Structures are given as C-alpha cells and as structure tokens.
Image 1 (spheres, rainbow, N blue to C red):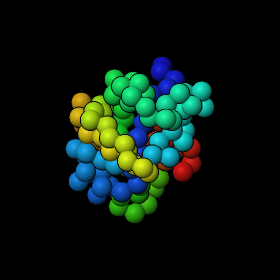
Image 2 (cartoon, rainbow, N blue to C red):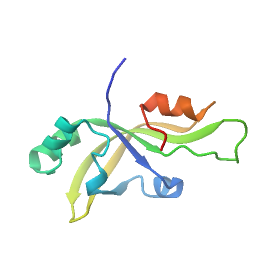
Image 3 (tube, helix red, strand yellow):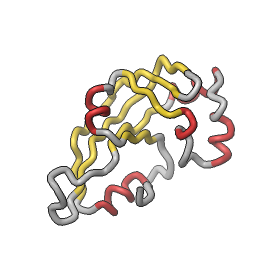
Length: 124
C-alpha cells in the first residue's frame, strides 16, 4: 500500500462543486501536513517546485460531513482524482487549474474514523 500521496481538502462543498475548474488555496497552509523535508523543498513555490507539483496526481476532496444529520456514524465526502496545471502565485494565495482524472462523486463511509484512516487524516 502507498504510504503517501497528494491530498487537497476544501471545507465548503459548494466551493468544491462550483470552482473545480480553477481553485485558489491559501499559500501558507498548502504544506501543513507535508513531511518537513519535502515541505522545505517546495515552500518557495519556485519554478522547479511548481513543475514538480504539476507532474503529480492529487486527491481533491471535501472535508468529511454528516450530510443528512448524524444518521448513526455515516459520513460523506466528495472525492476527485486530479492533476493541477497553470499554477499562479499571488502574495497569499495559489491558484491552479484542476483536471479531473476520476470523479468518485459522493463517497460514503460507515464511520468518520474510516474516512480519516483512508486518507491518513487527523481528527480535524
């Protein structure tokens, strides 16, 4: 099993659905959960770092939510497998075009812990 992968999460389901073509991310939070040695090499977002990131596929997801209220412990996420391109830097943000390779749609997990373990996510 792969021990690491690229993961971008959005808190707003509406933002995720409406802006999937081009999205803007907080520049300073991009590498929050990235291993420190990798983050250090990428945090400048210079030409080499962007070229490297644009070669990698990403899981693009929403944060977990209880869509219809808490029915037992069932939770949902929207999940896409994507690539980024046309990355542009602003002072505090990074925008990128997303090309969806696989749209998994709304994925249901029987418990929030199963969603967290699928992506190695913390409680947040």
